[in-house]
Length: 329
Image (cartoon, rainbow, N blue to C red; front, side, top):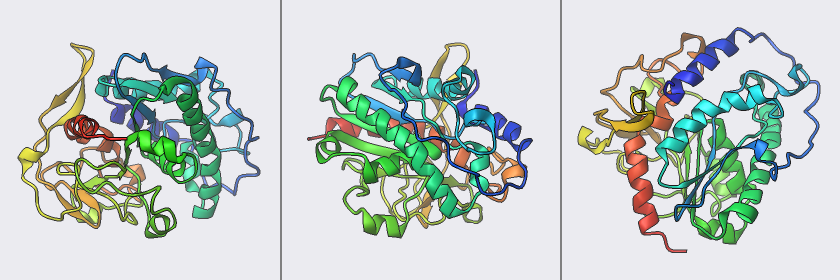
């Protein structure tokens, strides 16, 4: 098994062979509900052996659409092969966050091709996928959580869906149970923050509850579409919005799959970091690290979007322990 970013990269390259100029979608998929009481629609339902949970929403991995036609732009999770597309990514995440009960729903995410559309169309499409995540979360809270503290975690499109959940899909009591929401590899705009100041309240130190976002690049010229409008991003080596240059020893290592042990390990990845327009700059890393020429317009060379979910693995794992130890409902 390879690291999830490489699985994702292979899927991206595969998906590019299908890309062509598209018209607007003829219609959205039927807004039927997924029955989350059926374990078919969960990668993992947790084992309840730990005192806290992770509810994880995976990034864009799907290349097969709902009903496999151009009238829709969503993954059809009734198909085993579509669920399998998410499994490599989720298996890695479940290993990395093994200190927690891991809950991972499948959802009818937007496929790669959907991102060719305008911002207005994407907003409409995102609501369909977000409804699945909200339904899965409410089922998790009603049937699996049993009052335990929990973390929301996601990457890329998964983080996009969690931000929608924070804005529209959680009660005040549920928010009080949440230790933190790590929405890696996405953004919150100034307009969103102004409209939802409590739901999207950023965590600006290493202990406070709230929303945590980070994106990384090797150079400021590599900031791409995902993070350019972000107003809440932190430097994940110190969990603050300080723009100081932070020494390499504060980077606690990246998460990497170990074939020999069939496990995820934290390995050294020394780099200085500093925050620039809410994006974390890592000047000591190779700009070719996860570069895909076909995606250069969205993710220029030096943009580390495809690495964000594991690049700061050591820092995230340590910070989760710290936040949970200080959590007070």
